[in-house]
Structures are given as C-alpha cells and as structure tokens.
Image: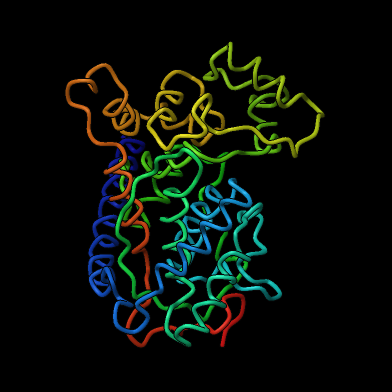
Length: 334
C-alpha cells in the first residue's frame, strides 16, 4: 500500500508540475511571434538560411548537430543561448554537452547580422532558426518546413552545473519522462523529439555499456534485435575505437521520416534512450500510432506533429521584452 501511495503521489506531482510548466510556457511563449524581425531586420531569416546552407554543403553532418544544439540549449536554462557561452565553468563544459557542434556557424550568422542590423537579432533566435533550416537543407532529408516564432533574448547566466539534469543515455524511461514533464513536454513530444534521430550519427562510445556491460559484469541489452546486435558489435567491437560513428536511423539516415520509429519498434534502435521508448506503455502507444498495425488507417502526420513539438520545445523558458540581452558576440556576455 505504501508503494502504491507513492506511485499515485508521484504521478499526481508529475501531472501538477506538467500543468504548471505548460501554464508558464503559455505566458512566455505568447510574447514570441512569427516575423518578429520583419521591420527591425527584415533579411534576418534569409541571412541565417544562407549561412546554414553553406555550412551544410561543406559538412552535411552539421544539420543534425544544429538540431542537437537547439535541444541542448533549450533543456538547461531555456532557449536563451546559454550553451553558446565560452568561459571557465560555463554550461558548454558539462559532460552532458559532450560532442556539441555548430558553434562557429552560429557565430558566423551573428557576425553577418551585426553588420546588417547591429544589436537586433538574438543568438537564441539564431539557434532556433538554424535548427529549422538545417533539416530542410540537409541532403535528401526532405525535412518539414515550419515557421519559428522569434523574439527570444539571450540569457546572462551560463554555469556548468546547470546541465546536470539533462536527459542522459542511461536514464530509465521514467527518469526521461519526468525530465520532459518538468519542461512542459508530454510523452508524445518525447517520442517526436527523439525521432529527430532520423538524421545524424552517434559514437561507439555511447554503445559500449549497451553492447558489452548491460547487466552488471557482462551481457548485451536483450531488447536489441539479435540480427542487429551482430551488426552493432561489428561496428563497435569491444575495446575498439570508441570514436567510430554510425547512423542513428538504420537504412534511412538520409531521409527525415518515421523510419526511426519503425526501427525502435522492431528492436533496431541504436541508443538506449531511443530503444526505451518501446519499453513504456505510454510512449509505446505513441510510437505505434505512427508505425503500428493501426497506423495505416488512423496514421497521424509525423512531420507535422514533429514541427509542433519542436516549436513547443523552442518556447521553453524564453526571455522576452526587457529580460536578458541581445549579445554582440554569441560566445560571450555583453
């Protein structure tokens, strides 16, 4: 009975926190608007798009990196560009931000914007717009286009400890859900934002435990399809090069589509956090709504739903009005 009471209390607490954060998001997000710079810097979005296009042509992998940068920025202090700051003990130095890229591209866009309209476009907005442009421009991805509400201002705080509560690859699905709920994001948002892994790669470093030490002392994650387990072990042998990279979306890494969810359903999810989406009833139901047996009849629109979730994520903890600042250089406070 005590255990059941704890579960019920925890569930009520999560629901309450989620509702409260949604309420706060509504207030903050309402101050953002599509076309915020239409009169103050009308070429802002075109400039950012041009910089992203050049970056993706030079290095196609930067597209997924810019999506990840947006996610990591929003999940710590809100979408305020705090992850961009370079100083001792800044947020960027957290192990939970390991491997983040795209900083120079953001800085390049900022430099051009400062020439066009000084002190006008925030670094936080550049990150959000660059993420949108990256999935449209990347190779054959056929990624969804969507409008990004802008008007974010940049934060004045960036501490390494603030990133301690980022979702981690070895978190349980319940821990991940709570971390998303605390940001006002639902199970559906969790599944859809995880599905951004339809493009991008990961390093063997993040697979070592799952392949060789899943149970204390030895063993592989039993949820991995046996055929796929052999593939992963060939890609990432024990005591091999942990920097070798492999696609997150098996056999569909060049298209922005729901194949990542099919792979998760069939035991072909590459990283633990993706695979765990099928271990939980609520997230499994969301996955199945896109790729399950009934999805052919009642199939929701994956790309459209993804854009709703990423726009929603882009409103977490935004600073608007007179809060924060508009940085002159994205990597340092004014």
